Image 1 (cartoon, rainbow, N blue to C red):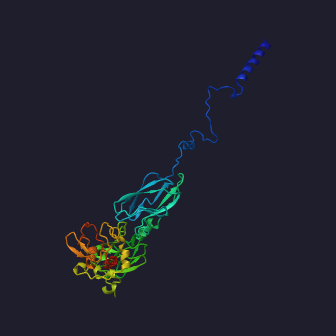
Image 2 (image 1 turned 45 degrees about the vertical axis):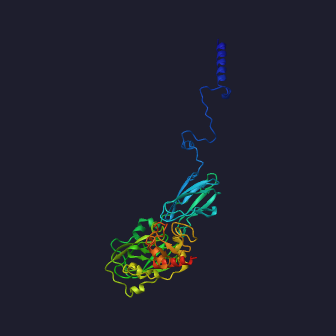
Image 3 (image 1 turned 180 degrees about the vertical axis):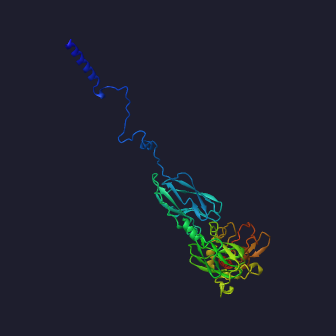
Length: 411
């Protein structure tokens, strides 16, 4: 009996051991195996959750379709774009400024041509990887900061992110408070004052002078492009002032506030304006008679609110062809010098010619006629053209220089 029980126990143990053999030798119907790659994150961990989203192959900001670039006064928006290499990419251009602009990339031989205000168009870029500068070629606009960068990248690699700009001291509340004069205590300048003409703003933007007193204002162009100083309400127009040049004007005005601005196309719209405060009660500067306060042709009696140019016939000044050619940069968007048709009449062969007007009369394009047409563009409209020329507010010397340049183009 004992021997039989022992045999049964041994057989039972063998059967149990057989069932617990090598796990790879038989199926495990109650166990689900999940293949696990080496170093795979544990399910439910933050790393696993992050790995669930497939990474993007395109860099941030990379644009492959049509890209909109606005030309404003005086800047591009955006000033930085990123496109793929060796691919045709269309750039849609829109002039949303008040001045004429264009879009140029010299390295890629891309030149859009001029776009007047409100005009649109497009260019196509297909370039090798690299960074290329685009800019506006209208005189003075590039120098005033109308530039941008196109990043051309290979294989969807994004250009390195630009580091954040350091905070300007002007952005600090303490700095702002230090730069702001106390309200109600303007610094009245009865003697010579200085105004710096920069790209594209005045320093100072607010100037306080004595009323009913000739006050000399020295204008210093510290920028890289031409600027002007104009106060329409006082008939003050400095004329174009070249970089590095200093010009003096004299202002004698009644008490009040007047706007001064730069008349170079697009500069006023870009914020180159200031306020002239003329206050009563300040003593005139000793030894500064009105006759000695004027240091340039631009600061002639015509620039004083006391004497209006319309009160007497204008005495034509002697013009300079070289200065006139430089001043003509703002005019050649509408007038040609090669005889081709534009918005306005060509200047080639204009001087001394017979001009037929919309009124039906014919006049000679002499200095007097050209002066009137520049100073008052709608006084005598040439037949076949619309009266769209704006009043540029040019000073007498600049008008004389332009007339001299137009005369040099006669046939």
